[in-house]
Amino acid sequence: MTRQAVLPITSVNARSYRVPTGEHETDGTLGWDDTGVVVVQVTAGGHEGLGYSYTDPLMARFVVQTLKPLLLGADAWSIEALFDRLQAHVRNLGRSGMASAAISAVDVALWDLKAKALDLPLATVLGKVRDRVPVYGSGGFTSLDAHQLTEQLEGWTQRDGCTRVKIKVGNEQSRDLERVRLARKSIADAELMIDANGAHTVRSAITFAHAVADQGVTWFEEPVTCDDLTGLKEVRSAMGAAGFAIDIAAGEYIWTLDDARRLLLADAVDVLQLDATRCGGVTGWRRITALVPAFHRTCSAHCAPALHLHLACATTGLEDIEWFCDHARIESMFFDAAPQIHAGNIDIQADRPGHGLILKHQNVRRYAIWEG
Image (cartoon, rainbow, N blue to C red):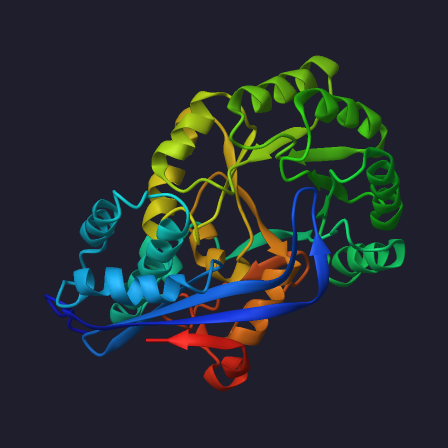
C-alpha cells in the first residue's frame, strides 16, 4: 500500500446526542438523568476518522463553527501540529473544560483516520505493548438500593469475571459504610474500590477510610476535590501512616499536561487517572502518559472503555480501564464492534484498522440533537 505524502482534510462534521439514563443516578456530589455525547468525523484522502467525547451537546457546534476552519485543507498526517494549533486558538476561552473535550474528540478522529490510512489498528500505530487490558466494574451509584447494588456487583464479578469493582460513596457516612459492607459481601474476595467524587473534607475522608479499613478497600478515588492538591496529599499520607494498603486516585478532571504535572508534583496520588475524552484525545494522552514514569506512578483510564482500549494497549504502566456502566451501555448502542468483557478483560480486534468503532447512525438517530 502506497502512503499518500499529504492528506488534506476535506470535511469535518459533528453530531450531538443526549442519552437518558433510564432512572436518576447520583454520586457523592452530583445527580444526572442523561449523558451528552459529541461525535466528530474527519475526512481526508478518502479515509474517515471518528472521535467522540462525553460532554455538553453544545460543543458539536463549537467543533463546526470554531475548530473546523482551522482543520480544512490541513495535512491530516500532522496531528501534533494540528493539536497545538487548536490549543493555541482556544487560549482566550480557556484550554480546560468543554473546549478541551471538543479538541479531544477531533484529535481522536484524526488518529483514527491516520491508522485507517495506514491500514493498521490504532494500537499498532501507537506502539502496541499488549492485545488486551483488564477492566474494573464501575457504577455503584448512591441512588441504587441494596438489591440493585448487589445485582450490579455480582454481574461484574460472577458473569464478567472482573477482579476489581468500584462503588460511589460520599452522600452520608453511616449509609456509605453499610453500602461498603454490602459490596464486600457481594463480591467475595474481589478488590473493592470506592469513589467519593470529592465529597469529603480531609478529616472526614481519613475518618471514613479508617471505618472501612476492615472491608479490604484498596482504592479511594477523589476523597477530596481534585482541586485540593494539599488535601489529597494529606489523605494519601494518612493512609501510609495508618499502614493501609489504599491507593489514592485522581485525575479524571485533568484537561492539560500542566494539570497532570501539578498533580504529580504535589505527590498527591498513587494512581493517575486519565480520560482521553477530556485531556486532549490521543495526543494529550500520549504526552501525559510519557510524563508519568518520571514520577514512578501508575495510571488508569477513566471511563469511555471503547475509546480507551487501543490507547491502553499501547501504554506501559497502565493498570486498567474503568468499565463505567453508563458509558459501556452507550458505546454498545452507538458503535459497531464496541468491546465486551471476557474474563475480566477487553480485547482489540486486530483485523480492524483504526480503533475499529463504526457509528450506528440509524440506531442512535432518536438521541440526536444537532448535526453540522
